Length: 253
Image (cartoon, rainbow, N blue to C red; front, top):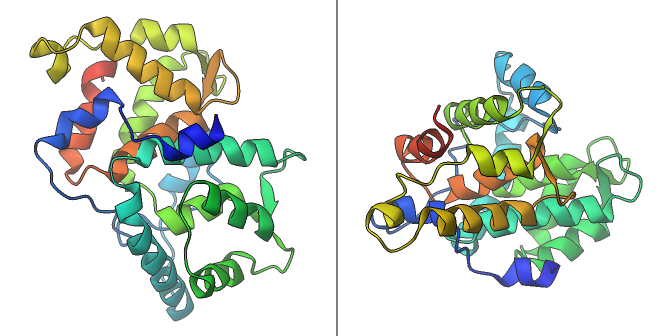
């Protein structure tokens, strides 16, 4: 399954909402989306985003240049495969995390990058590792690692991802049953449905299949997994409003 995820070309129906309008993709602008680490729950994401960004030091600026170089090198590989790669990586990291503390070592990250065909030069990898492993523990939070080398959505986009999840997670448990996702997701206004190329059920099933691939549990989706899905989708969408509409329309927010 992991190898299949790492090789598959994304066939997610939502990707097609903007394919005709775009011929290239860009990663989120690092000036708009500062690295914020360990966003593993909806609450933590909201808290971090509400705090004002500190002044950027020269060292932080240099660190960002290192990560930006890696992100630029990977963006071609991520084009149209962002969802599969991001969700696949997230699930794979969880499988490697036997202690359940969110931390992995250097060998684990190298193995993951190779498996998902995201190899970077040894120099770039070592530079990023020195930055991320600043405390010398020889282990790094895998959410932090993923955001560092791939980038992350800007806050405007994240706010709509949170709105969608909060609407689904009405019990505020941090996870949503797949059956509730199916009930709430509306594909009626999807371009492929409007054009007659696909039925609502086909679009919904395709979306759920891709989303479920990201989940550690077969019957529910956590906020972290939900965000991973849209993080991957965001990579291939240049315009903020195009991305927001992809969330707003099916979830009715």
